[in-house]
Length: 245
Image (cartoon, rainbow, N blue to C red; front, side, top):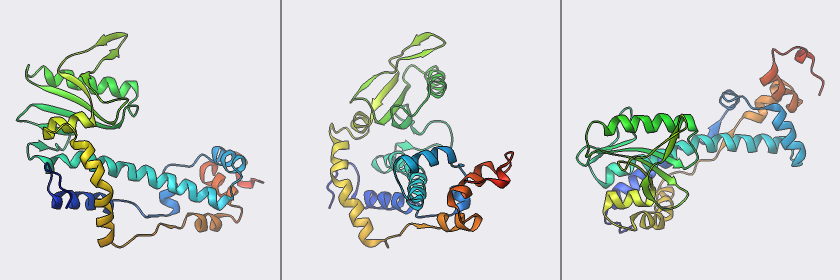
């Protein structure tokens, strides 16, 4: 029993399970090389930190899996609200969350620093256009990891001019949960039970082991693993067909 009044045990369990099942547990060289590894940085890293080259490759594999899995945490944050209240919907495009009854439009970000200035400006302009459709419309930039707990007008500089509007808000996730649930500490209560929910799901689901064929596939390219990594990135570069490293 998780005893959260704003979401049922079943919905919380199933939503957590859906998130866990999205996690990646395997990677091969083709997937590994979709985001071409920087072989020069790799050389510095594994030399400076005195890592075995296989250990360095495994670390890079984990980093890539972690980047992919971060998107699944975004899924967890975005989709949980439809279980808390049917008023919250996830549109196919545009805003991340919409409550048409309360006329709230939400852009959800994991960290306060994930948007560059261009992306932030584009988001703010979209929100400006939305609030022009009615004085009772509110747009929110909701940040899971904000600088502090807040619900304030979002101030932004566009083309050296500062903009701010009471109906365009910058809201930390704890305050957004308060808005959605009507409970001041609902986000804290969710965090308190989340480890138990994850444990409960893992007890029922088979434990996946990360399978990583990257190192062995690199050995097939060249027994000199470092040379293989350079070949992946610089195969067409002048002189690299006879690289001696």
